[in-house]
Amino acid sequence: MDTCAAEFGVDTPYLYSSYETESEAAPTDRRKVMILGSGPNRIGQGIEFDYCCVQACWALQDLGYETIMVNCNPETVSTDYDTSDRLYFEPLTLEDVLDIYEAEQPAGVIVQFGGQTPLNLTKPLQAAGVPIWGTAPDAIDLAEDRGRFGALLAELDIPQPANGIAANLAEARQIARQIGYPVLVRPSYVLGGRAMAICYDEAMLESYVAEAVAAAEGRGLLIDQYIEDAFEVDVDAVADGRQVIIGGVMQHIEEAGVHSGDSACVLPPYKISYYHLNTIHEYVRQLGLAPGVRGLMNVQFAIKDDIAYVLEVNPRASRTVPFVSKATGLSLARVAAQIMAGKTLAELGIDTEPKIDGFFVKEAVLPFKKLPGAINTLGPEMRSTGEVMGHAAHFGHAFAKAEMAAGTALPLEGAVLISVNDFDKGSASKIARDFHRMGFQLLATRGTARFLAHAGLPVQAVNKVSQGSPHVIDYVRRGELALIVNTPLGRDAYSDGVALRREAIRYNVPLLTTLSAASAAVAGIRALRQSELKVRSLQEHFGRGTLRTSALESRL
Image 1 (cartoon, rainbow, N blue to C red):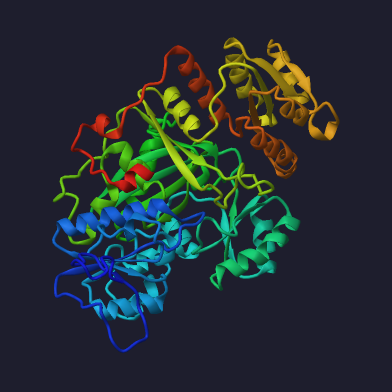
Image 2 (cartoon, rainbow, N blue to C red; image 1 turned 180 degrees about the horizontal axis):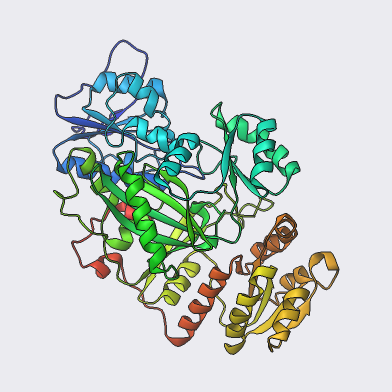
């Protein structure tokens, strides 16, 4: 497609494949690399991967390569006319990618930057003789295949939740009984946590297995022990086969079991001990070197009872790469692309984890207000449609900025409703005392109210929905609540809280489902009261010229 209507020369033609005998692609004889994008933007896969594709294009162009971008979404920066040298608007299927490869004959194909969709093409592309740059296809399969991955963790003596692989409902039942409920059911090779679910009993397991088996496409299901009341940690790193450098360690503010794309997180972590941080660094190093990762990798941990469990390893770009890159000033995707082209971390002068000035908080933007009636509970299947970032010298201000940008500004006064599970009541009393000292009125469901009153706090008891009016929903609808802290535990608590969450979203009342989030809110409110927010750009933060800016960075 001639973007200049034949009036001017076209530097980056928009190319489409056809089954005609004539080809207007006119390949060059330059050294070239093909980069596979993420395809249509949708929940679970979107602009974060496009950021990585653009950074890779820039890095490889600087090394003298002609870049060939393959993507089928016109609403992305990777498909802008001035990003790559050649652009093919094609679906990310084996047939289409092979057609382009045969026409262009690139030196290699990069699959790491487009998320799960291109990653699933790795083995068939290799079988067709296509050279895959970066992490070897077998190493990618090792991380994606839950059975092989579990065996690797056992070999390295790295803790993992108890698990098993099932091919059908009967096997899933047997494994779940051995592990003990609740369990996390998840297929391999899926996008955005699709068909993943937390099952609290056999009835729930049966209702989810059919969908999960269909999503697994014959690869089997992994049945994992679900570690309740744990907190999750995300790590983005880059490796060159000989060395692994961590780009950033992010502490989730939501509980474990919520998809990483839906979780608020903070960089650097503010409540993780040095012992756990050292353990995480060592595990990431081993998991990068053992399979020979070349490029980006993401490792997810759940920490409980002083044990850091590895949940999964993704040998590709993760959706937190732009966040980490902007927070540190080091473009991990750019570094990874150069490594795939043959550079080493030592040659690039990268030998330590980048330092972080202040705190950066990422918050998910959820679509529930615009989609009335949509399922509004967070879990292992991704639901967010965007994200924002808040930065400040202190954690409280950074969290307050992120909440404000996401559309749920923290209140400075009013009534706080607290309803927590039995395990959280001790810690909740400290948070309640902090709210009381800041002048907030305390309301609580009966069990929590008794505990807070016993701790000497003035609290008003309110009914749960099941206990009859006036109940918590009535308070929400009358506009009498400024903030809700609700930490569910178990199947009944999750289902009982659906109505509360729905009404909180409808009436724009901030709702926090973990004590770590409540503690963060306390810090944010206290910071807002102490001093006004200040705003500056990332360019001002790092000094002009440090970051390469683009239309993409302004969109994220």
